Image (tube, rainbow, N blue to C red; front, side):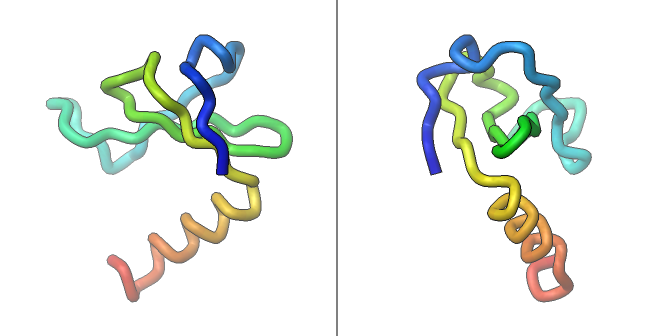
Length: 71
């Protein structure tokens, strides 16, 4: 896992907000998939830190987070 300095370091990405994020703000996550990695950031702090993980790690996280065990 890596932290990029800011979203300006990684340009040209299409960011997508979590479907669980409401319109009134709160705790929102955005992700942007690149060729070999997935970037994750706080939608309220788009110029803040970005967590970068491998596509395999992201797929495993999403699979675990959406399993009945955690829902």
